[in-house]
Amino acid sequence: MNTIPRDTDKVVYVLGAGFSIPAEAPTQAQILGDILKLDHGSARVQEAKLELIHFLKEDLRINLTKIEKAALEDIYTPIDRCIADGTSLKSKTPEGLSKIRGELEYLVSIAIARRISQHQASEPKASWYVSKFAKFLVAKAARRAKFAKNAKTADRAKQYDPFSIISLNWDILLDNALHSALKRECPKMGDYDAFGVVDYCCYISSLQPRDPRIRSGLWSLGCRGYNVKLLKLHGSMNWLQCPNCQRLFVEFGDKEDILERVGSENCRHCQKAGYVNRLAGSLVMPTFLKDLSNFQIKLIWQNAGVELMEAKRLVFIGYSLPNADFEFRQLLSRMVHPHAVVEVVLYKALTDDGKRQFKAEKERYRQFFGNRKLRFHSKGVVDYVKTVLGLK
View 1 (cartoon, rainbow, N blue to C red):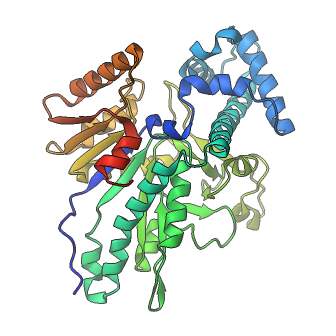
View 2 (view 1 turned 120 degrees about the vertical axis):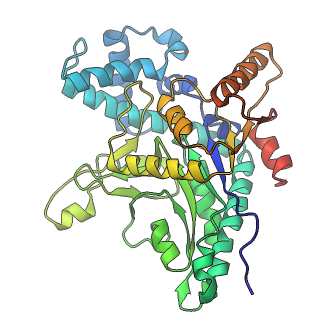
View 3 (view 1 turned 135 degrees about the vertical axis):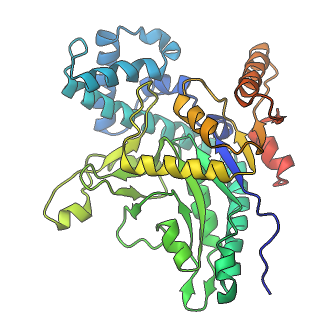
């Protein structure tokens, strides 16, 4: 008889930018510099880049030779403030600022995708730890479907909810790795296809019509399948959204292929009703005026709060708990269980600057969590996957 395993104390993994850096995803400090280095690509990339350069130089008066010192928050915040107030910023009207904002979001995504793909071409095994981590998570999640095979234990199988992932990253390294791992784990069970799906914990549609691998987690559980919960609080590079019906369209695979559809792909659901609405990107950009009113984003944040409340153990991986993420810090303050164990995976570089940064990040966690016992792993995500999780 299938029995629910005892290791049902939920773990919530919280992923920051440091999770993807060993796979050569850029830090926020590198993104603007990478945008200025984009020297090939579509005509749209070049046009958007030239317009952004003009805006940075003429309206924000940023010295492009020192672009690495410019923070994305200092670019997005004045844009968002002016758009919200209906005022111009130097030569740019609110409508012009909205266009600049959209093009900057597109260029940020292209720059991230380009850096990762170039590194993977030269170092194809650099992201091995992401694949190992994904396989580890899928194997744990797939046990739910095995319990559900017996109808008598189906209700009990729903109680098996071992983990979730909360990510503050835009890149889709883990998304694609989970999708690939799920393809290999999909068994047949009687009259049901026990699909395992990446569950973004909101309402999604597949970008390609009738793609059976992209379904909601609730649909999969209803078919006695299973879900891998990945809650991306700041959106994702493989999401496109209809501005009219608010549906979120998802695709896995090549990031640039997905991004090129921004502004050119129609919402097929609205089209059936006689409306033409172009799909837009769905990223929450770094700004001190974050707009979290989007229906799908609000749903993800609400579900993230539930996951944090249920967690018996929190594992922060490559996340420095910056003060600028005050919305997420507030969510942690409200929802984390008072007796939850907290582990923090950071990287202590050997340089003096690296040691100072590591010390500052540890102190930030200690101040935030007060007298709670913290456990720090100082060798970064790759070592954590290899030694702590035993996924060599």
